[in-house]
Image (cartoon, rainbow, N blue to C red; front, top):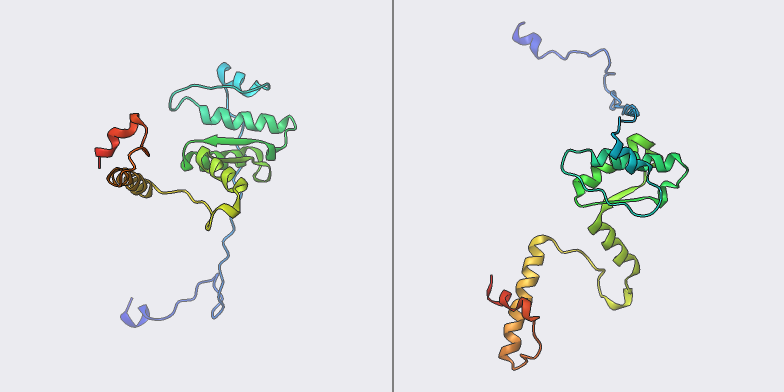
Length: 180
């Protein structure tokens, strides 16, 4: 190939010259997964219908699979997906649960999955007295929490200097006053 031919504009058979948007990407819906095989303990959890149930198991034992199947079974028995709430500890776990429940039950029928913290925050926001605060309540990040605790601890020393030592941290937390 000569240098003159390498600069020549080549036409691609699927591209219309001078027209934007010649390619259209279409998401292929994922195939609905087959129900997994559950052992007897997992089946007992999925079949449980009355009251709370505590499931204790180590990592990689199938807790998430069991939970997804339990939700799918409830929906199959006629429970309204909007009345099912799945709580977990991390954002990553909540996203995985949402994705897996949506695949298993159909995206339009997937219940809500969120972290304990996010759910509690939503409750506080939904029921807070808006007249009490200038700005809406918000969650503090980890570093913001550290700064706030540091300021509270420093405030205790200031109170003592002002002769207000009767306003105190609880005794079991007083040792924190000397920490960074």
